[in-house]
Image (cartoon, rainbow, N blue to C red; front, side, top):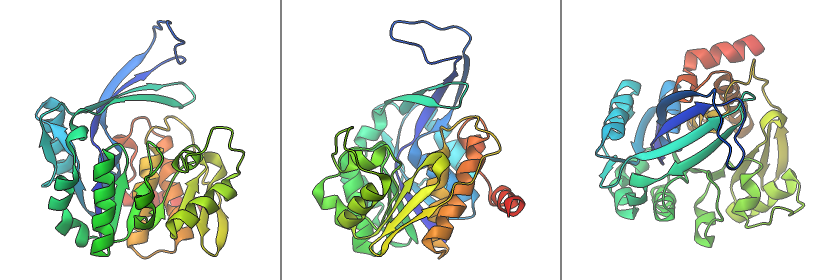
Length: 305
């Protein structure tokens, strides 16, 4: 089973704070930590820990963060031969985490702005050899579209994790086999205003009509909603033993979902598997340390069954 990922890498600089500061407010009492991040890298590592052969396309700078990234991928068994070394610095994300586990993130893209269609074209053979292509959107639109197009041309199923969300260009919709927005991202993809008034089922149907494929709207503690041309169906949430940090939950879900699809599992079962991965991840601080191995996930699923 092979997963290829086109997405981001960045250094995550995290501050755990008593509360989120208001405008102009300075807070003391925070606890600082730094680590690897970026949706593409997180998803690639998550899939590798679950047993997939993984190849990653992203861009990093010729700097300490970029060198640390290559060492991380080597340790985790993620193929990084096609990763671009850019002129700009490696992406950095600044993350504030509140005691509830909620987070606020600001990003300086840096090297990721240099990831272009030519880099994706050089990755074509990897995409063609994969069971599932995963694309996320912390990279330039040019690279997102190029990856989806190469996936379609190669006959590789495409999974778009539309985060951070932005309205999708019309040409992209027909290139997406599986779309996995959360409740906040779904209306943004459709270009709707904040007061759009649509429920999750209506949003799911609207997105499914655009892609013609499968749409999975993740809804946190409410589980997920799966939409196909034949209709929509809910998938219940898997309760977490504790909510410590929600930062990597979406990436953990995406990685596990892609692995389950690559293994040929039905969509609803793949969503259940992915939900278990997300529940594991939110119970542990940090992102990479919280991504489950296959043994950890099997134990969690077995204990809950």
